[in-house]
Image 1 (cartoon, one colour):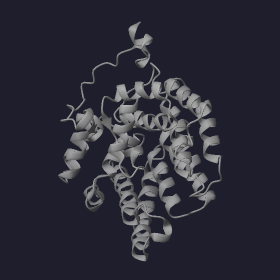
Image 2: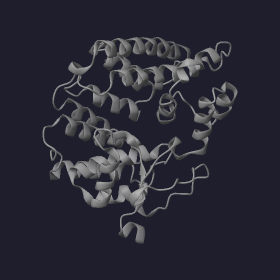
Image 3: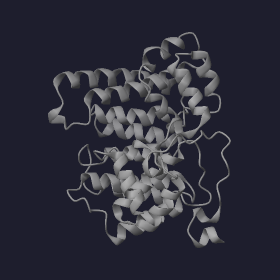
Image 4: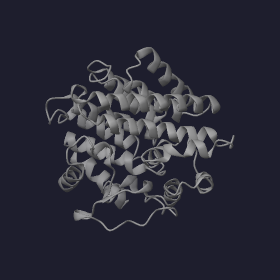
Length: 329
């Protein structure tokens, strides 16, 4: 009763997670950067990769399905050097070869963007472009092979959307890849969020396209499903494209974000799987930019200081902005 009265997670207290990592020493105002999705099993997986231990990696992989778990795959793709050994390690391992190709391909995309940097295209050097395309070429080859080996997997197609966007492969190729992912999971959040990025004018879209796509997807989302996060992602992208810092501060946007949060992450049926904090950070930023403080307060309370760099990376000082909006809420 009291939880519902004061707007805390629909009145239902989430069950204690037996795999939760201990919260590290907090920084100022109680913030800390989430590590390994806050999950001991994910930490075991990343530790195995850092040790170049193929046997330990396979053992730690057991609780996860990398063909569908975008959050866990992202943790592995962020680990520098994994591309140097993991495919060779699986050379004679037919069962896990597709997994090795998937991890390496995802890493090559991240590594490619590291070479390109986040600079405007006109400011990227010729050598940076060369490395960018060289690494994305390898990623494409590995991800397409992984998709062929595991036809039901979603994650290779979602990653191919990113490489296709970076390589400017055009709408026919990228729409085919989007459709391939959504045939395997019509409600896949990561695919929808990537397509929202693709539809931005700075890439391949026209004003309003991304938001229309997000709204259509949200209309099909069951209650408690994370697909509602596509609305938050779309509004953040709209804010990035805008010349005005207060572009989201209007009652219509506030109401739409509030409804999406209530329908998804704040709904009692939402499942807090490893990486749930990323969904909450997405809404925390969108709601804060829109000035919807009451709902933002609920989201920040649920996060309890857990900071994930995405989507705050759009700010020059991500951690400071998280703290500022948390304090305002």
